Image (tube, rainbow, N blue to C red; front, side, top):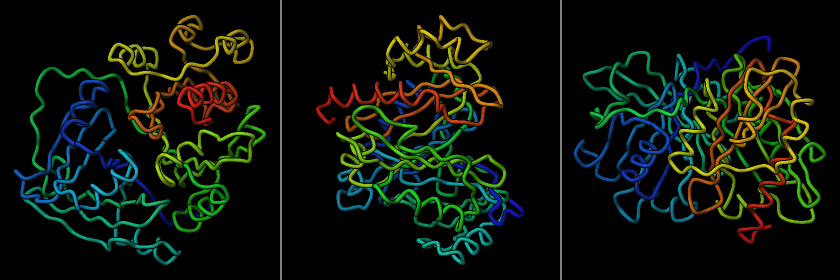
Length: 364
């Protein structure tokens, strides 16, 4: 792009609305290897919600639950189950970012607010995204505290047991049929993003179902948002299933980078994380299709890790099963070796696996 009117420093944090923030924080600590950083709750003066900030590498998750049954967080969880509510992006100038977004048609839900404590000042503003998901712009260059004013630091107990998750790679949103193009244009107009790639129902389909996807990225390429919509098919697609159980558009999965995907996947398997498993036939001609890589193909087959290559290099990826009872939010673990793509060569095998899981749940 010739100019980047919305320069983003990167991902600041992802906030999940959950039924029980304390239990979620414990789960992500003991299973995914995130460590507690800060807490907001009754002890810190919050009368309506509790939040736990968890971090690993450059990833920061915030788990928030309501303290009262009539709170909007409680209503959100009753309708949608646990899920991503807020995607926070760090900016150098929150006033400028919100002004630019508003001038280009964004719906502002929270004008810029400044919060202060002994550690400095944080400025933030919120705009509407798909469904009831929101984007928050965060300016934290004048803040040195653990997370934000109102949060107290947490002393983590026990030895750290990280799994090697290092950074957010991309966040995928599911929308209704006919809405993908709207949100792709919204990213261009409001956020200054450009389209990195476009997958049609011919790229991502099986005998029964299909989806379409557009990948949007910001000017620096640091922040990427694939947007999925279902395509017409003989049966419900994984996107339809998500929309049914999340009761609308929202974040389908968060992809996180690791420097050693085999080590990360082994650690997560030992902690009882279930991953999607592609048919064994996927690995029969994988080496011929992908070519020379640094990893051992036999180990990748054992662990169920997928490989794909583009003109810039290759990537390794794997997807968890849904993290909650509803078939909604899940995670991707990804290791990139130059490749900027999203595993197009794996789409068919993944779809077969997803449909097999849908059939088990009675939702295909």
